[in-house]
Length: 559
Image (tube, rainbow, N blue to C red; front, side, top):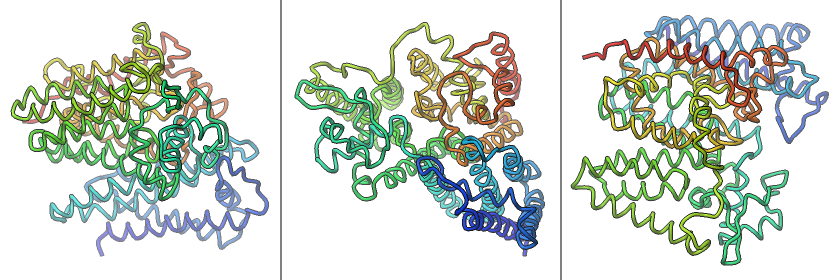
């Protein structure tokens, strides 16, 4: 048996030992611990980890075997071409979990959250290491068909598993109840009027508190419609009818996987190796990881825009349909839909007629829908906040550097895409469109996405961002790999601690809030749009420039 196979088997045993360890903790301590079902229902599983020295030789032996097996597997992983960086990335979750177990105070709610996440981090680290050790020989020795099958399987399985866990331990929040209420109306009442459903409090089936009446809009036809676009409720209504909220979350997770797969196909048209790297960044780091199972339309709009780019010129009409559906899912993405359509039809004049006609029909249908219900081409109230150019100076860097909503803290590999955006030596049409989208998003006071995970309004432009990232990953390979590992560790933390995805936009990251006095001290050293400090902002802008942008611009593109 090869070393990598022995390591994989050992790591499987380690993961199984940790998982069994946690389950045994549930059985042993469930009778003595109180659990709030409205929050995390499994945090008591990790109490056995804290009481290991007092739990007897049997549990001690299991712990030694688990971590011993993990060490053997890490050594085997280090001997693969992935090297010690990959082994270190697999070991990091284990160490982080152990540290959080000792730092958490079970007498506080935040401490209990840390406890349940610590076990999740440890088990997830073992499982990720197992996955890498098992799949590496298959990837190296397998045929192109096997590689493609592996990519498709992982693209769908990883978000589905992560979304299932996060949906299990956290109730719908943010705009999700509003979308679910629209699905409930379509399935139960078979109409679009959510006013009667809101009056009967039908949302109690999936949401424990009250949905504000501001989530509904009155129409001149005597009914109330959701404030948000109807594309996602219509798409997910069959899933809601079959399996309720969990089925809807599964569909949204599969959409996340489909977007990651489409990004791979988008870059593969130019280079397969670079496409694989971009796929790893997109699938295993934020923002996509944070939106696994989240009931938001932004992932779908990004998928439609990438699908339209892939569809031209062979499937020009389908590409037009995809672009035409974009504002049906998220009305605020109309600039991206138009900006994507213009270069497509300009380059492919033979496909211009079919693409433009299909998109125009669906856009016209949306305008007619608004005219019918409100008497105007747009709804009377925007769900995306007020528009003001004065907000751009703070919001534009905040999309990437703000400690609550900045993408680079959770997935720093995307800084290489910013290097491509700022590099004047290369010309790409995606640069102008992405820069325009950033300015457009930054002009709204809800630029950070409201009560939602990081990068909500960057998801529709993820195709543009990935194309820019591909240049950076070609030029700066080793730095890109290190930044990717940082993003993977951040994703493991987000999946293990789903509540860290949501920030109150009060100037301090939720992740730092959970660390008490240490986190509050660290928050003062990180940039914030809510509580800006000029010196901190300048220091971190310079730091990120030297970390990712300058290495990108000074590196030579391989011939």
